Image (cartoon, rainbow over all chains, first blue to last red):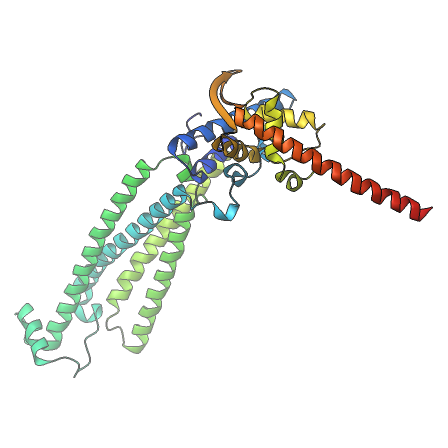
Amino acid sequence: MSGGTSDAPSDLIEDYLDRLLVSLSGSPRQVRHTLAEVEAHLRDAEAEGIAAGLPEETAQVQALERIGPVHAVTGRPAGLVRPSAALLRRLTLTAALIGGAGFVAIGGAGLVGRLLQVLKGNLFMTTPFPPGTYTQADCARWLAGDPGTRSCVTAMLADHAFDYLLQATACGLLGLAGLAAYLFLRRRWSDRATATALPAGAAEGLGAILAGIAAVACFGQVVDLETVQRGIGVGEPLSLGIAAAVAAGAFAFALWHRLRTVRMRTT
Amino acid sequence: MKAEKLKGHLDLLLLSVLSRGPGHGYEVITRLKVRSDGAFQLPEGTVYPALHRLEGAGLLASGWDVVAGRRRRIYHLTMAGEAALAEQAAQWREFSGSMTRVLGASALATAGGMA
């Protein structure tokens, strides 16, 4: 069997064999033997079609129609074909990409938040707890963390803002680890079956949708805080919204680029 | 003939085709079509699980060879396969004969009723 990569031009028989490979059960030897048998069969049928004057692609289509669906060869009904290992790999890659990028975006929100904190202050960043919902002990702890102030509310706001920036930074680092895992796994699972287990651009499209929803939700909260609380605590959702919008834009661009590449490859 | 109708008889057909000489999967399907005058049409892929099942049951054996530049798995009947073929063929002839007799009598009755 000729080796295929995700960058190789489309060959219908290769695609069929990829699907068969991930659907076959049995020992590695049985799988190899069945794959070799079916490939010889398909190439024979293709050669027969070409000898009869058909173009190569039509001959391949005819060969595949004659052999029937993958489950005909595996001998199991379509519904009983085990979950494709390639599909699981692709789903893992998708989760690593979207999760990694999402956490990196939260880390980016931390940077935006830090900028807003410097420009507009802690009251713009976070909302203070209502009076009566915290104790003297809480106040003492917040004041200990901010010795430069005597106001409990000011110290509370500084503490909240610091917590937000710290958590965002931690998320950013986690996201970078997720993206590193994604790059490592993508290199490791570069086979065609994994690349074609989901439609091209599925991960980018899903990422764009999720990030877009997050951005809309955050900006909605910004509007709500602006109107109800006169801008107090707007900084957190605003920074998250900006980061989510940037992530949505990046995913949308990646989706456009991916689809364009696929279209150019097929024409 | 529809593939569904062939399902129950596929083992017998494959044993019969291979009783004429060893062959690989594509060859078996081609012989089946030729010998049935194209009447037996089934998704070609369904032949492979059947061949593997028959091999697992010890009725067929296989080996690898290069034919026309391609590596192929060649199947042949074992002794047990020959015995199974003889038995299944006898059962089929008996069944077929009974069916023919019933249908023949029914056809005569219909013809008589119409006269």
